[in-house]
Amino acid sequence: MQLLLILVAFLLPPGAGAEEIVGGREARPHSHPYMAYLRIQSPGGGAACGGFLVREDFVMTAAHCLGSTIRVILGAHNISRQERTQQRIQVRRAIPHPRYRRQNLQNDIMLLQLENRATRNQFVRPVALPQSQAQLRPGSRCTVAGWGLVGQNRPTDTLRDVQLEVQRNQVCSNTFNVFNGQSQICVGNQRERKTAFRGDSGGPLVCNNVAQGIVSYGNGVGTPPEVFTKVSSYLPWISRTMRLFKTTRNQKRHHTTPPLMDSSSLEQS
Image (cartoon, rainbow, N blue to C red; front, side):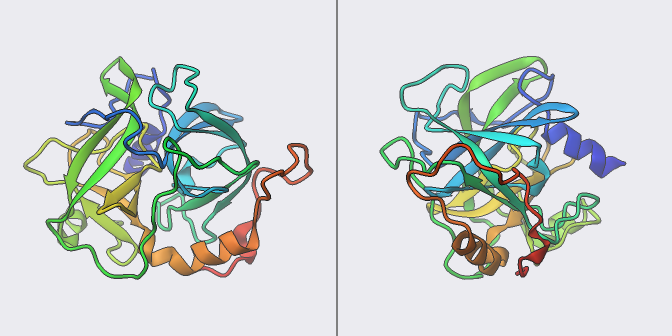
């Protein structure tokens, strides 16, 4: 039940009475050109998540951000405005990891194939992924960005960011009985009130310009530490999936492919 409550909290849409980046600040406009804002529609209603561009035709996010339809906004700073820098693209195919488990948020990673390829420019640019499964050292300083609320009933429409510190696995093992150090990263110094929170699910943990993690879950009250999916643990699956599905630059907008595909046929990492 506790984990379910955490999950619901992370998925609350803007204006729903939740917090967002805790202890952060408004980001310099377009200083994170890989950031994606996801508008999610499901039978139960709407929600919002973060994500990040990893190739012109793919956005990465958390698997628990899956919905019936997803629309991606790239190049945004203020998501409530129609900024000239924005590119709004429908998701053609959502591909959650075949071993994702909603009950314990294991393998909480998903690729979104875009209907049309994004146009790369100074406002929209993919972020690098890890080249190997090398471990992040405890004490490493990384950046998380996202849109959401800055306090109870205090919405913000502008992108915010915060610097967080990678922790030893034991810190999260002591806090979360489902933590898995092989596929997850423990982030956030307990002596600092700095963390990603509600509405930030799916956003990247960027360390030295490389996306090392994906916002997954926390304790539900906005205090560190919190758990990120470890991107480097899924590099074979990511590579295979993006090779299998390619979006041509002039992809037709009308198609018969459903937004959700059965990823069980893909070999997992």
